Length: 169
Image 1: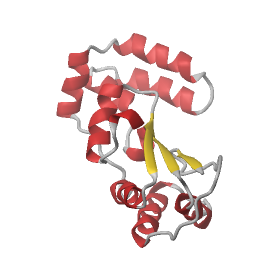
Image 2 (image 1 turned 30 degrees about the vertical axis):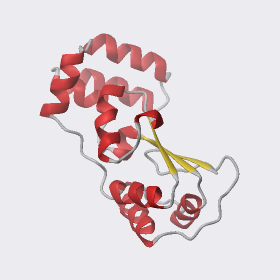
Image 3 (image 1 turned 135 degrees about the vertical axis):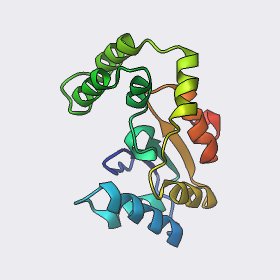
Image 4 (image 1 turned 120 degrees about the vertical axis):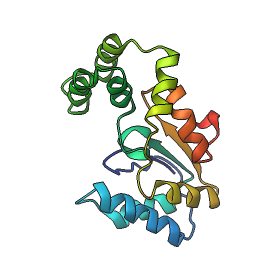
């Protein structure tokens, strides 16, 4: 079974469930994530799905980390409000992702040095509970992937902290 987990903590089961016992720490990690930002969801179902997953794909922005990476980068370049407005449009379905990304990149036009400077001066904050959750998934040999429309250069340090190989980004 492959699950995709996004900022609303939704998980979609795709194929072949794997029957295993759900580790206590994994339950605690899901509760920490759920209590923080996922009201009104079927937590028991999410825990069951995670327990049966062969692989879990996490959206990075506003799920693994607490913020939207492109918004943090834009703010570090003095373009925060303008880019955040485009991010909101994209997240609310008012604009296609590709169009919003192109518009945001046109506004900020970041260089590699801009990205590196942003990471040094504004390190991303992991969502509470995510490190325990991913460690528990690793312990039960569940493949963990990070998915993002953002910059790989910004995601690799997060993957490193979470012990996720670069080929799973």
